[in-house]
Image (cartoon, rainbow, N blue to C red; front, top):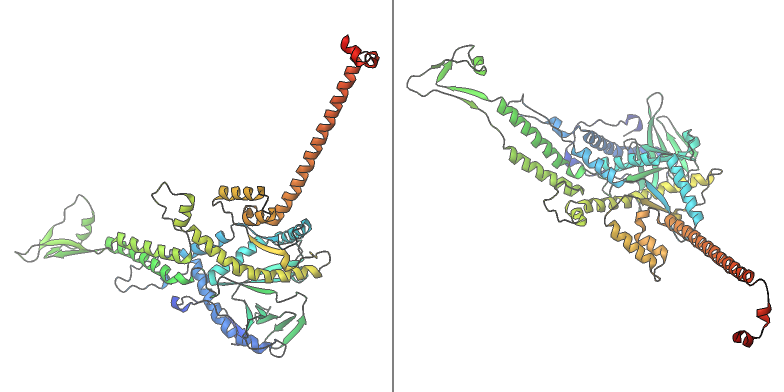
Length: 511
C-alpha cells in the first residue's frame, strides 16, 4: 500500500470473529536510513491499514454503532426493532475510571531517599500538572481499552509552539494515524515511530522518527533532519500483549444481548399487532373498524350453516422471563470475562466488607487493574526517558533525575481493611526491630508517595523533639527561678542577720 493511497476506512460492520487484537508491525531492516525509509514505511502501512480498519470498527462499536444495526427479519419484515444496549461503553468507562481513580503520580524511588530528591520529583509532577497530563492519561487509557493500543507523542515546547510552564508538550495521537515499527530480531526493539498527517493540499505524508533522526516522507521525496529528543518520541501503550481492547473478547456476547433485547421488543409488537381470524363467519364491509369502539354491536354472518363460527386472534409472544434469564446469563459471563464487579448484591446481612469484595468481584477488578499497570508503567518509563532528556537540554529546566530515581504510582483510593492496615503500620513503627522506612514501604500505601511521607514524618518528628526539648528547658529554667526566689524569701524573713548561723550547732540545739 503506497502512502498516497492510504486512507482510514470507515468500517460499517466487521465479523466479530475476525478481531484477534492489533498486529505488531515489524521490519527486518537493521537500521532505518534515508535510503530505505520509504520501503520500510510502505511495508508497515499495509499492516497498519488492517489495524486501522479494526480500530475504526471498535471505536464505532464503543460509540453505539454495533452489529445489531444490520439485523434482518424474514417474517413480518416491517417489525424489525434494533435495540443497542451499549455495554461496550460501560466496560471502557468502568475500566478507565477504576484504573485512574486518582492521577498517576511520580514518587522518589531508590536508595537516595533524601528530601532534595523528593523536591526534584515534585517539580517533575508540577511540570506534568502544567501539561494537564491527568486528562491526557485518560485519553491514552480510553484508547487502550477501546482498541488495545494508544500512542503518545512528546516534543519540546518550541516545536509545539506552546508555552505553558513545562519545557515539553504531550500529544495523544489517534492510533489510526500513528504506529510504532519494531525490529523482527530477538528483543524486538523499537526502530521508529510513524505519524500520518495531511498537508494543506489534503495529501498524505508521514513523519518517521528514529532515535536521532526525523524523516519526512511525501509522494515526491524524503527529507531528513536530526532531533535532540533523546529517543523515539512516539510511545505505544498497550492494554495487553495480544493488543486487544477491553470488550473485544466479549463482542459476540454483547451482540447476543442486543439480539435478545431486540427480539423481545419485536415479540411485544407482534403480539399487539396480531391477526384477527374469522372462522366460518363473515363481517360486513366497514364493520371491522367498529370492533375497536366500545358500546357497539357488530353483526357476524354465518357462512356455512351447522358449523361453529369463531372469531379469535393469531399472535405469538416470547417468554419474557426466559429471555431475561438468558440476558442475565450473558451479562454474568461478560462481567466475569472482563473482570468487572457484578451488581447481584446478596441477601445476607452478616457479610464482612472483605466477603462482599470477593463475592461481588471487586478483588478481580483490582487484580485486572494491577495487570494493566505493569504494561502501562513499561511504556511510561519510555515516555519519561524522553521527558528527562528534554528537561536536561533546556536551560533552567534540568531536574537532575535519572529513571532509577522515579517511581510510578497509581494512587487508587482503597479503603479495604484500612483500620487493620493502619494498626499494623503503627505497630511496625513502634517496634525497635523494624526500620521506619520498611514500615512505610510495607504499610504506607495510604500515603501515596511513601518516600515523601517518610521524609515529612522525619522532619516533623525532629521538629517535635526540638519543641519538647525547648519546653523542658523552659520548665527547668522556671523551676530554678522558683527555687532561687524561695531562697531569697527565706533570707528576707530572717532579717538578713547571720548571728544564728554563726552560733555553734550545739548552742542552737540547747536553745
